[in-house]
Length: 246
Image 1 (cartoon, rainbow, N blue to C red):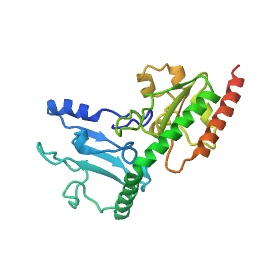
Image 2 (tube, rainbow, N blue to C red):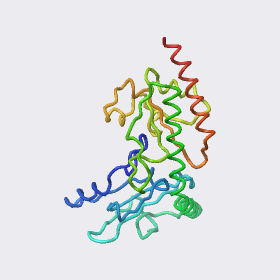
Image 3 (cartoon, rainbow, N blue to C red):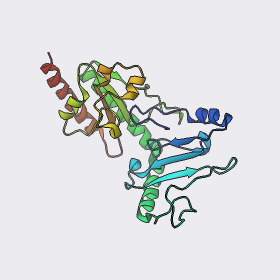
Image 4 (cartoon, rainbow, N blue to C red):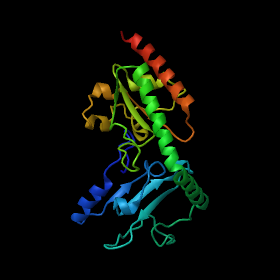
């Protein structure tokens, strides 16, 4: 993946692609978390295939894209859905035209606003981090330190991503105490798994601390007021939970 969904780290895909191509290996990149949030240029990444999903950049659900590199060696796709031969025999079935048009329009808006929006989200994210560190205390940043966004493309982390672990707190219990905040303690696709995040464990974060992680995702509709509300809500919930375990 180009950008990790839990800790927002941006992977060195160009270097990875170079290693793959030296060994004759094709590389598919899952850019779902990155498209619309950071600049994504397939030629600079050097990948052979790149996929993304519209709902991650405010497009309609149920539609996505797969970009296939042209050139040598050719990338040949075998259809998983056969029948009518639509889309040059790559995938049969009637095209979802409203979804495709909606996806293209949403992506156009995101790309147009990306330079200013990335800086705005990074500032909100940093403000949220400072607020939690000052008000809650005993919190640990999970993942890379946020880097300056200038020059563009040098950041190590998605601008709207923040993952903080709180000591002596269960992330699941904290979520239940925060009904007005849409947050998670790991990947949304693994929300039914009670175990601590395998991503955080792979970073060397102890299991007890990983269980207290919270992932915040800031987006287009978030403001300073949302950040202040989040800090106050998390602070109050943490204080109540820590009193219970003393």
